[in-house]
Length: 165
Image (cartoon, rainbow, N blue to C red; front, side, top):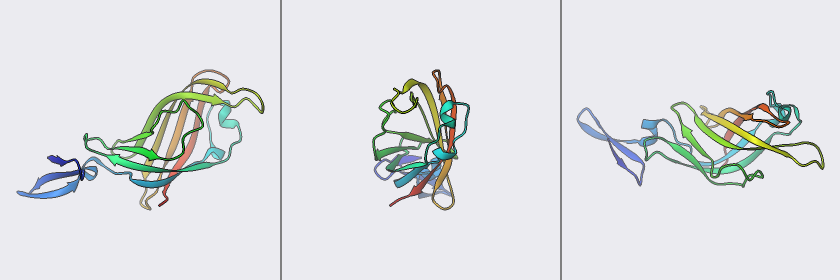
């Protein structure tokens, strides 16, 4: 298989004749364009105090581009709002595992302690999964394990991404 990096195309031999096939099709999937990512925070679950704190659902619009030139497809956020939490790794990158886009990252959870009380910061690990749907959206879950402090435990919420442009 040869790759044409500029067009992200792979050339394969089929029955003795060459035919072009997108690398992402060979590897799995692409996630390109503008998407509104919705986090269903109002319905979160888990063992952490944070899972029981009321919070509205929230969404932001991001622009994604997928690169499969390494043989593994990675969708990177190339434009969108910066997170309020400065410990989140940027830019977010989602790796295609053959059935879903996965973003795994280490950061500091900022545990809300009440109005006027400083937040408690503790190490956390998050895994977000987005699975493509037939309607063009992606759906999945976002799980965070918080290690220590008053918010120690898990926070799990459903997530979705919808084409926005």
